[in-house]
Amino acid sequence: MSLIINGEEIPDEVIEGEFHEIKSHYERLLQVSCCERDPEFRGYAKENVVARVLLSQEAPRRIDEPGPEDVEAARNALFEEHGGEESFYMNMGIQLSDENLVLDNVRQSLRVERLLAEVASPLPDPDDDELEVFYRENVDHFLSAEEIRASHITKNLGEASSREEVYQHLCKLRKRLRDGADFAELAEKENDDPEQQVDLGFFKRGEFMPEFETIAFSLEVGEISPVFSTHLGLHLCTVTDRKAPQPKPFEEVREAALDLLRSRHRETKIDAFVEELKAGATIEDTDPDVD
Figure (spheres, rainbow, N blue to C red):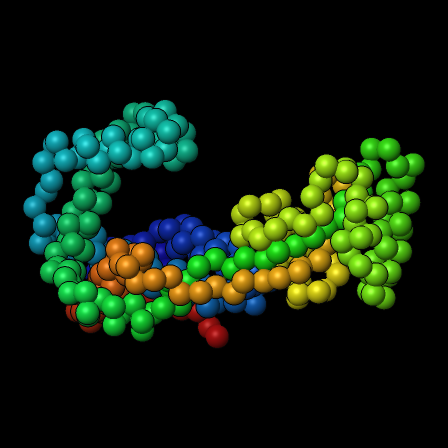
């Protein structure tokens, strides 16, 4: 065991599991390749595990054991979240005979949740003027979605003699467009589906095929895309206009601003509480990461 917290030995697989979740998160954000940040992520994992264990150790000292009704309600909510009792046990990789273990975990989770609520209380209750100041200081969190207006040329592959033939044809069209040909006029002649609109109008992320959006949102206004493919065929597109994100009116996002303010308050209070617990804890790391 590489981590011992107030005498409680933490299984190495707990740290490994947390490490892999953190690394996967950064990989999804395309902020990591291979292993160059592994020591950093392992450090994050240990910090998270230490915080969770300290809270779990403190909760029974300060919070009464929840009643059977509360435990049953929390357990049922857990089952529902996983699509039912059978799905829960299958997803978690545990046996139906381990119900007592599940109930113990639910009791402990409820105690920790109540401890955190106690630590964070009272939540701030700002008036509108105070909340609007917070909104203006954090306006980047309350922006409208970016929108672009795009036009496209689509060539189907079903009737083509080869994919390469279609690709080469679109490459020639791209050269003509980059040399100054009018995109709308060329698209009207070249689009395989005459019912398809050349001008797609304004749209946000999530309204079209991901492959199309990835290309379109990467373009500057007037830029001609490379030839790219989707399940509909091969494409060229251009962005004809762009609406940058704009601050949403305060009245429209008042509740979201209040939620963010309270979330920040809660995080600050909990972080400070965890640091207090760390200061009074005995934490042994027998396998510290080396930078």
